[in-house]
Amino acid sequence: MRLMRDEVTVRVPATSANLGPGFDAFGLAHAIHDVVTVRATAGATDVQVTGEGVGEVPTGEDHLVVRALRAGLDYAGAPQAGFSLHCHNAIPHGRGLGSSASAVVAGLLVARGLINEPEALDNDSLLNLATEFEGHPDNAAPALFGGVTVAWMEGPQARAAQIPLHPDVQPTVLIPTDRLPTSRARAVLPATVAHADAAFNAGRAGLLVLALSTRPDLLLPATEDRLHQAQRADAMMATSALVDRLRQAGAPAVISGAGPTVLVLAPLTAAQQAVVGQAWQVLSPSIDFDGGQVTVPEPSRG
Figure 1 (cartoon, rainbow, N blue to C red):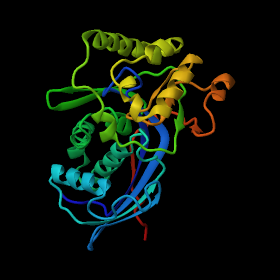
Figure 2 (figure 1 turned 135 degrees about the vertical axis):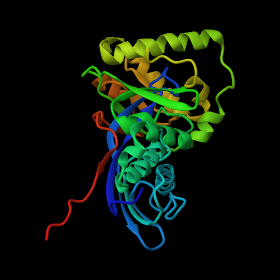
Figure 3 (figure 1 turned 180 degrees about the vertical axis):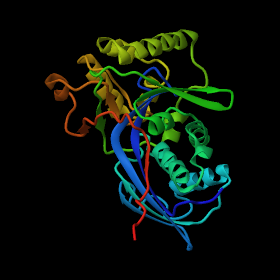
Figure 4 (figure 1 turned 60 degrees about the vertical axis):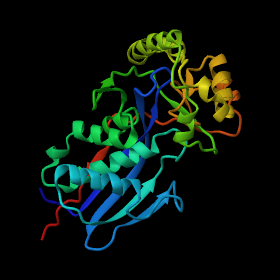
């Protein structure tokens, strides 16, 4: 195995995990992208960042894209090098839009793009490597494959499949200025759940597949949850209150991933917009059906 190229650019979408009842399983890719260009160098690794994370993220070997890139090269048996990275980040950090999963997928896709045998890093391998970083595949799957996905574990192996999507499913995201570390959002969840709540969510997760694919009129009941959203309310009170207000107004609103962004699986009506208030950035990104993409420079002609 060898490095065949010395420059690769990748584009990876933001994601929303859970979608209400599909805790640690469902995910959706948004047309909000981080773009990373990587060049192999003979010197030390350095990272330049524009957009989200400027002055906050590491600029050397500790950068998450670099760590994932090196893990991908190790997995493929390819040689390491120094790398110069330019990361233009549009995915908000700490908001429940999958920024860390997107960074991991970006690094792994760079590794695939650099090596002479990209089949050594096929999609199954990338999903499993990303899951090792993330701990679960719910964000990594849509970042890698695009669209709406359901992901699961078979023993140590991560698996994912895409859900056919009805054209009326058009997400709206409401992004606050506050951040919430995923570790804090997970720490408030109980170690066990009641059987009735587990049964409730199993039924709603099944209904969600139907609502997303053929019956968007069922999205409001299909996005009900008893496993994680109410349990996290004290950690993101403004988010929880907004989800409640929107649902009372008929919008299929949920917490995006670990929050605090709110995801609505439909455009907002004028009445629903009126309950949002001024503290939220409202975006209506299309769904990214392509997932992570790799481009390489055209060979020079001379």
